[in-house]
Length: 473
Image (cartoon, rainbow, N blue to C red; front, side, top):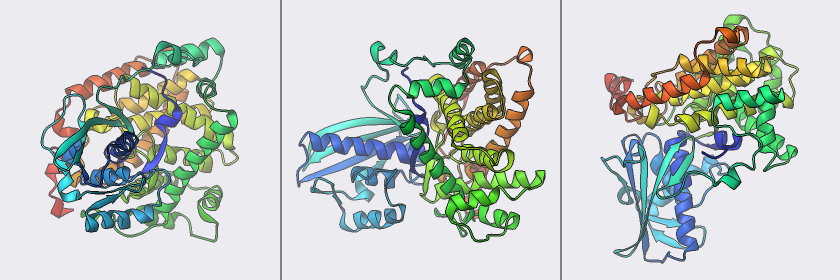
């Protein structure tokens, strides 16, 4: 498989799900661009979207139908004003039309033209078919798959680069052993290896600016979550908790936005118990924003978007308050490449692997990034990542009501705490005593995913999703 950039693993988007919201959004965007460029749209056109597998079973709770409509309209998930999402969707529902960016207006009734099928497509659990009609005549039909983390592929496309493109990057990184071999041969840190690859496509300034932009969005999502009260949308009546917890930990004095609040955190000097509360609330805050169709960073997915920001803010606030932008860049590069290796060798899709593929992977990514910042060697970083994933193996994805809320939000808190613990274990571990490598645990995660019953893979057909009556929540 080709090189996966850290910017493909860490993507800015809109909640609540990278596979069920961001992926379908991107697929719809790609489809509509294709038909516009082909000149196939007419005033008599309409589009039918059929959702399959996990996209059908939990699509309504994951806002897949909303994402499809916004994607067809050509909106960018990174740049859209999230406060306008509801009015945009309301207009489509009222007018039964899509006012496309090329000036064409076509028929589209979400209640009839988005179809939730009962079957699964063979290639992946997250399948969708876009069909363009001119009157009753079928003009085009394309199938896309949402692979997790906002990655998509069109049926029939080759999912790799040719050799010439692939080897223009100085470091080939398919496995964790590849990563260690390169660091041992060059005496570089993991982040240095990643930066060397990223420099093929971007300048140092562009890399730093983009990674700091990603961190800014992460920090803002924590800040918004920690300063917003009320009940989450979706019908479960889940109350926001991050604000209640953090307001007890620190009085909300005068400061200017997320950056000012982050500076104020550095002066808190909390007890060990309060540090754990802070970290837990950071993770919960992000995913309360995610559950509200807010802007977050897939890390590597939306459902696990809170783990990496929580661990990084823990480091910046309570471990090294004097940290600089360089530390943020190094953390995100190291975390990003670990996520890329999981993507290549296993899966980051809960619909394919359960929640081990989301919270487990994000915890492993965060553990590796934190270990490098704590002065750990590359091998200690991979040990920490292995420890984090090892203790998420077999975790199911069983969202109540098909919403990314229960148990998803709390799992971000737990994943962050496990990452911090795994980093502490990894940095104290003698590499000669290690019995299980990161590659071993990645392989085990994939075999576990294949053995796992489908009802525990983001279908809401098993586990908590059926044990707890939605009306009891």
